[in-house]
Image 1 (cartoon, rainbow, N blue to C red):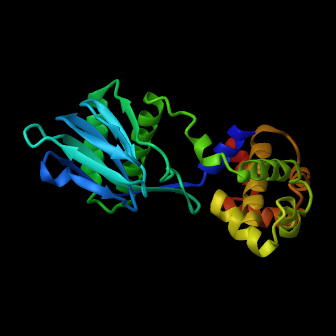
Image 2: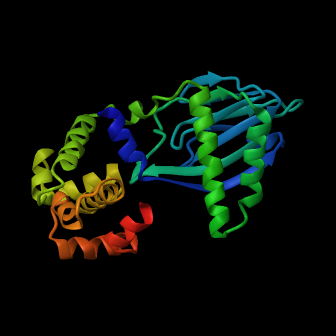
Image 3: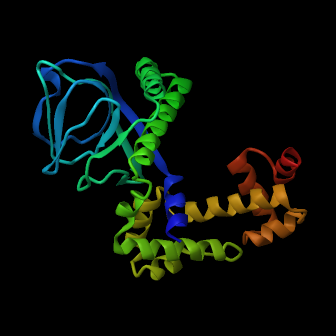
Length: 273
């Protein structure tokens, strides 16, 4: 269930790069007890120095990627004689209003298996950073996500989402999302869902949006449309039967489906068969 919850949450992940650069300046990297509001991602290409995150000291080496979480207490030093040459970017990463990297966490650091590939990703990200076009934004996000995945995977942090979920909210949300999946064929109300996590509806709506990224009833409708698309693509059920399976009258289902996807259920089925 934890894996299912993680997958649902990551569907609502938003990342934004706010700065990107290649630098080898000496004084520009030395900071003491700074607590930035943004995350930092670095690739160390050469040089020597140290990083202290929340009181723990590390000595990043050339060929390593590292993620410094927003809000953590950071001290960074590099040698004046052999300063770090570093590719880096500042970025925001959130699931709803929940930060992907928690400020209480450690430095995420890993050895890179293919330095040329990492340099290429960073070089593209830096080159595209000044471009505000739609495609450039997609490519920047793609490069950032690939670099984050490389760092977490190579460093053995594949289960880092557990740090995010090890709260009393984990069980509540896992049970609630499973309930929604199983009850898509019948009417669901905010009041019913709020009662399952013992919250007043007025508190439940922002609580759900904080962790999942969208309001509860919008999430329910998205799940209904996801189920309908799967049924249209992979089964021969009639459209009226599929409407029943997602708890909607046929006319209302057709209207909502077209608004969501831009095409009618029958046209969607034809395009995916």
